[in-house]
Image 1 (cartoon, helix red, strand yellow):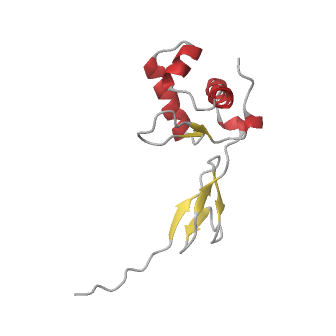
Image 2: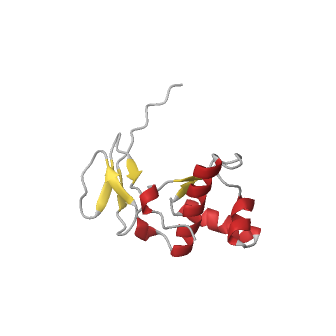
Length: 126
């Protein structure tokens, strides 16, 4: 038995001030709501320099510099040695950076961390 096609409904999401969501390819902002109309895609804007703490900035600068110098991203053990912190501290920072949209990783792939912000927004590595 054939089922009738399900129609996609337009869902509106409230725009949260200060969030990185800023671009809508279709639909107009109405009453602080971003409509999700057929084909509308919500994209994340690039994070700015003010969207991370000084310590997060140092981790981002290290990941970027290490990748440029060595030719591959650092392992968490490399960050642990550089910052002289425990393995759980490094892992928690990586998760925090990923949740904030500052880095991207591929699940199950070693050394897959990638900085998502422009290099000119990174602080000087100390």
